[in-house]
Each structure stands twice: as C-alpha cells, then as structure tokens.
Amino acid sequence: MFGVGGGVVIVPLLLLFCSWEARSATATSLAAIGITAVSGVVAYAIHGDVRVEYAALVGFPAAVSVVGATALQQRLRTRTVELLFAGFILAVAVWLFVK
Image 1 (cartoon, rainbow, N blue to C red):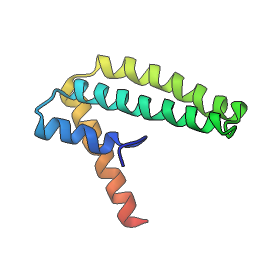
Image 2: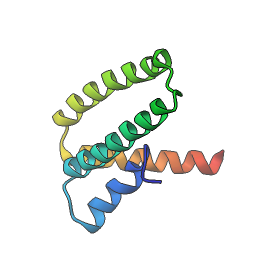
Image 3: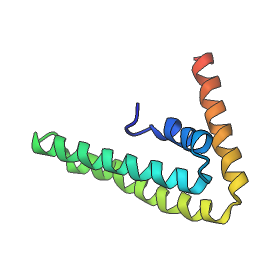
Image 4: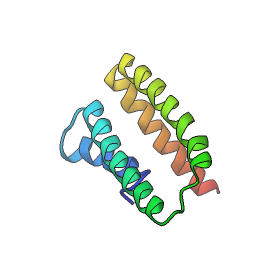
C-alpha cells in the first residue's frame, strides 16, 4: 500500500492532515517511493532475479519522464497541480468502478 503507487495515499494524507504544500507532499512521497524501489531492486538483485535489459527498458523511459514531469510541475501553479492530482485520482476511481 505504501510502496510504488503509495503516493495516491501519502500525498492526500500529507495535504489534509499535515497541511503540507502540494509540492512538498509530492516530493516527500517520491522520496519514499524511491527508497522502496531501490530496496526492492537490491533484494531482487541479491537473488539474481534482475534482468538488466528489461530493467533498462522500463527504467530509462521512467527516468526521462520524471525529469520532464518535474520540469513541468515546477512551471505550474500549486493549485493547478492539486487539481490535476485530484482529477487523476477521480479518473482512477471511475475506471475501477467501471472495470
């Protein structure tokens, strides 16, 4: 629940209950997700379950998109970021009910 994808839970909690600013809440969530992802890679690598070519196939585009999304997010007003996140959560909820 709090691993990769946990930002859907962590960000709203930080916004609602801790009164954090959206950018700080998002950054904190991404840091937590990064730590979880790195620990997962290390654990799987120790067991020899990491296929480097597939990791690069997923990891490289993800890293590029993070750089682009971060640059875009820094140019948007905080309220716009909050509304986009709320819209995303609503769209996921609707998709889950329809599915």
